[in-house]
Length: 375
Ligand code: GLA
Image (cartoon, rainbow, N blue to C red; front, side, top):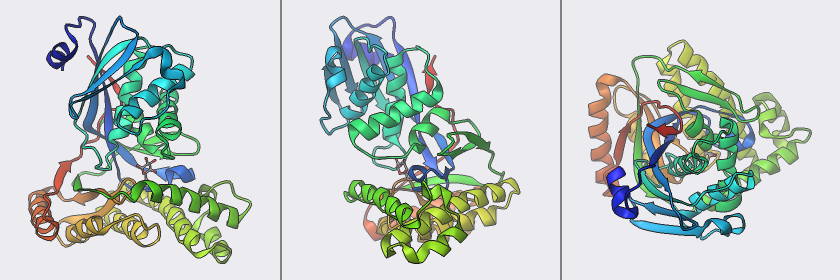
């Protein structure tokens, strides 16, 4: 990146590089904003930001991948309004850094990301966490505050009412482990997956427009369910028995949404238990149950995701498959026996290509460390 940086901005002796990873969520989908459980892992696909100070009062940013630049006067950051493009992730984080009482020094930034955009692997959280580290430039901030800062940038500036999962795992990711996050206490524990399974993400290569508005609607529908159940603060407080007892009181759509969230929280716990006893079959079954719940109750899947899941399940050596992330496109995540990986990749590529005329990308997922400076 150093070479490109010099080409774009001129020589920069004080150049520093920061990295923020993307993520794949293993299970616990659409539970984070309901203050429940999620089980993501950080990926080795990441956003890298090279940064060096400038002397002209500007925060300047160039995306190598998009071949586009944005710039803002540092003095304007506090009152900036969104422009509704990729620059908002940088500007939103910068604004939150200022609001936290840190100054943002004039700097040139170069962004290079290996997280495929629109893939549901959190390219935006990767951009947010790497930006935050680059702007803080070594000034101390508790990791959890870094997470919250990045989420606020997305909630308040970008205008996406996301939960905390993506930013959290991008900061707290660990090598060789998935991380179970309690989205209410904001504590976490590491989960070491058993031997004998590969985690593969398969990219539908589509992102349906519906996603953004559907996400908002789901947040609202969950709140409606909470109100109908009464005497609880969030769906996190509702277990399956409580839900069943209250189901009649909840209007049908909100009832389906709540059923997904309540059963999904239980599946996260069950998946952890299955993983701890090395029960790959049970882990796979929980993946499938999660997908069906997202498909039929939460209604955030799509034809392409369902096709990838169904195709995966027909391949010998596949323990389970499900959509991962917000839905309406993006990726599936698959638990596959190591010896079946080559056949899996071949079968998935051929079937998807034949059905949709698109070649899906397949990524082998290795749990990776969270956001950091690259020395
Ligand atoms: C998106 C959001 C997350 C989470 C997932 C669904 O990735 O950014 O906060 O809600 O969808 O699990």
